[in-house]
Image (cartoon, rainbow, N blue to C red; front, side, top):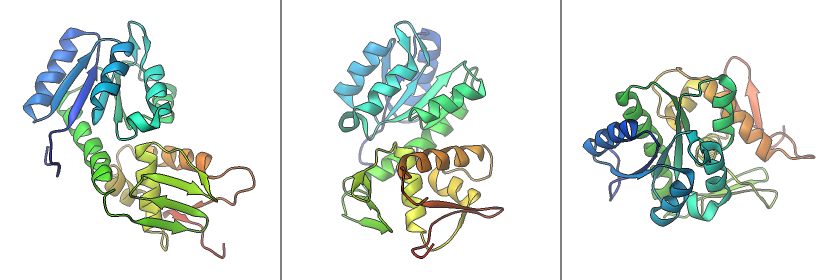
Length: 241
């Protein structure tokens, strides 16, 4: 997987169809990953709390509920799952379902039927950015811009002293923008550095996550932090802007 880590990443596969679970498990183990299996939402939550996997491949349609509720529970228990990435894997391919999954805190969304090589590539991409974030916490480095503070040691964000709860992908996007606070970055640069994509495919994900960040960072009375430079990309509001 070419991940600079001291231990194999652990993936929890939440899938109630044995055939699909077996194929995913065999493939991911072949690529050097440790794999756990759950057939229901309840079992997924129990295993996630016990083992704290690096990533969860989460089916949406489960025997005892749906993946949305599992994701909502995990994202609501920050101290238990802050490092856990979530990729939805489901036959529900309507645009509103994809948007809903990302809005709940999913890091990616793969629709069935799928190609296992694509799943491996997407898992690799998500793990690369989320595990790298975890490993970079050791040196204490606090990024500041205007009234926003991002602490890379504690993985926390504050605006005007108010805690801002972000998913791992939202955190990575904000960190990239803050590290480049003095310039405008293009959509392609964001895709490459935050999502590890080499082209502008699926570029709408950038607009989606910019929207999520704005919603969480800009409360009533706050001046907008992220600005759009039409035809160019995104940047942060200047101190005098």
